[in-house]
Image (cartoon, rainbow, N blue to C red; front, side, top):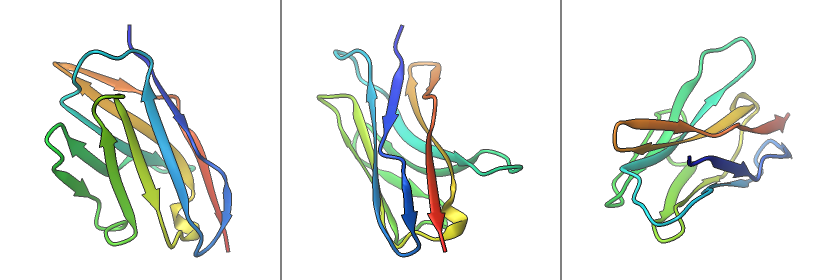
Length: 115
């Protein structure tokens, strides 16, 4: 069984930056894609960014130009660099990975942006 472990969430002031990391508990296989979703209180979980095994990236309109996703295939790790953070970026951020027909979710890491 593979699990995902996120880290890097924190409290930051508006305009600041954070880098989230997500590592798989086991190595030696290739995820089809890896990415990030987020969920703010009383909101539905929403897509943030994803990166394919070949490095193609996709972003939600709300984070384009501010967030950057990258991955280390050898380490089965995905990163989310978040710059110019805004209070409405406050949410629990979830890592997600697709392995064959299986979608794996992490437990989430809290990002709080103060105004």
